[in-house]
Length: 200
Picture 1 (cartoon, rainbow, N blue to C red):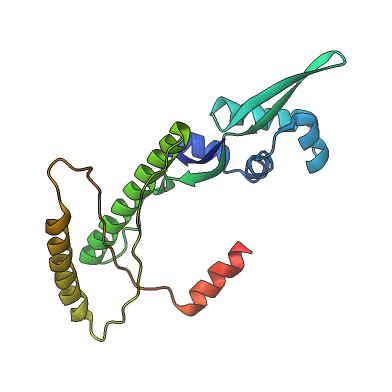
Picture 2 (cartoon, rainbow, N blue to C red):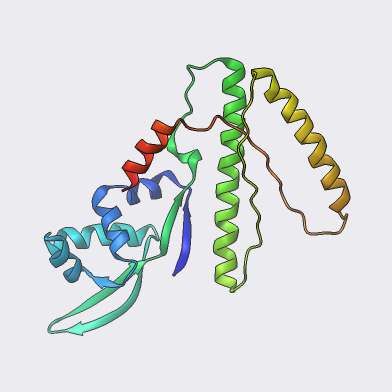
C-alpha cells in the first residue's frame, strides 16, 4: 500500500469525499470484506457493496484476496493508500472579492503551493514504489514586521541572500531542486485553537 496518493481529478475526489466513503477508506487501511464492514458500520451489505464498487472503479481501493464461502466468493479489499492528498486546484475557484494586488500575490502563492503539493506527492509515491527515498528539505521560521514596508525590504534581502547561496552550490550538470520561499500572515492564536479543536 502506498503511504499517500494524490487526488487531482474532480470526479475521483467527489467519489472519495462523502462521509460514508471517508469512513470506509479509513477503515480499509486494514483489509476487510463488505460483510465485515456492514457489521462494523451497522449498514446493509448491499449499500456497503455499492460504495466499495464505486471506490474500486476509481482506483481508491484494491482487491487483496478472494475467499470461497458457501455458495459465493467473498472479496477482501483495502485502501490504495494510507492517506489521500487533495490537490488544491480541484477544490474550486479562488475568491474574487479582494483587492487586485493582494489577490494576485495570494493566488500566486496558492498556485506555487498547489504545484508543490502535487509534485512532491507524485514523486513520493513513485519513490515508495521503487523502494527509494525522496530527499527533500524544509526551512520554516517566523518573523515579526514593525511596518508593512518591512515586508518588501525583507523580501529583497532574502532574495539576495538566496541568490548568493544558489550561486555557491549550483552545478550545471547537477540534480535540479526547486526552492520556494513564501510568506503569509501567521494565524491568530484564536484561529490556531479553533483549528486544533476541529482536528480532535
